[in-house]
Image 1 (cartoon, rainbow, N blue to C red):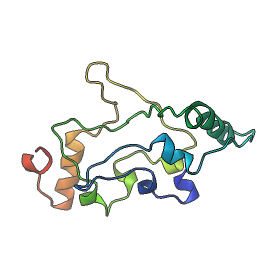
Image 2 (cartoon, rainbow, N blue to C red; image 1 turned 90 degrees about the horizontal axis):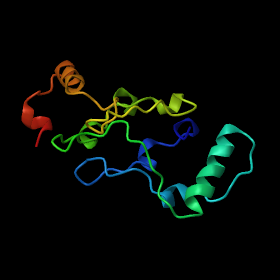
Image 3 (cartoon, helix red, strand yellow; image 1 turned 30 degrees about the vertical axis):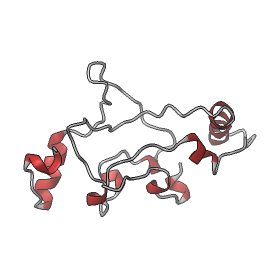
Length: 138
């Protein structure tokens, strides 16, 4: 929804100094644009009103679902991949009216959609980049 309005992913999703993903938007950052209820009777309006009522006004943090959380033994730098469109690795949320279904592996706690090592290896091979273990595993 936000990307369709011309917002870039990094306006809400920030990177740390080393290029690692540094976190999801806080309720406070959402409130910068969504501080008041809209009163609109549309799916988007009702969703914004729910966000304002349940999180912005109460100060509670939004319980985001993390679709592609990497294990601790994997180092992934978004900065090293900034020439690629986000949708090359992530679901193309700009083209969606609502988020995709979320499925979590009960044993690992990771989403079913977490990138698999073979996907990274395939892209590295196609781009002529190294697939040595130390490139991604620190």
